[in-house]
Image (cartoon, rainbow, N blue to C red):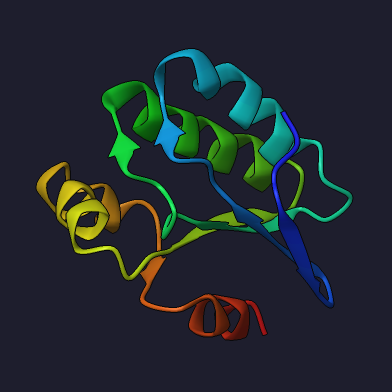
Length: 108
């Protein structure tokens, strides 16, 4: 899986596909944890389907990145994805920001 990325200093922003979960979960986790930088922002704005396996993938990737001295944060202005993160209380485990820029700034 090759996903669009942007680099902001020591931070990499990964723009997720339309579907996060199911068949894409394992590949997404490997992609997130194999970047040159361990400070990762997952931009969920383009994601229309975010299932439980996708949510688990985000937590697993965060744990792996933290073990490497990094972290994973979420950026999304998509109301449906924000609601999913709130309802599952993952917004208490994953830092969630409204914009990519706010998420990038949180690493400094």
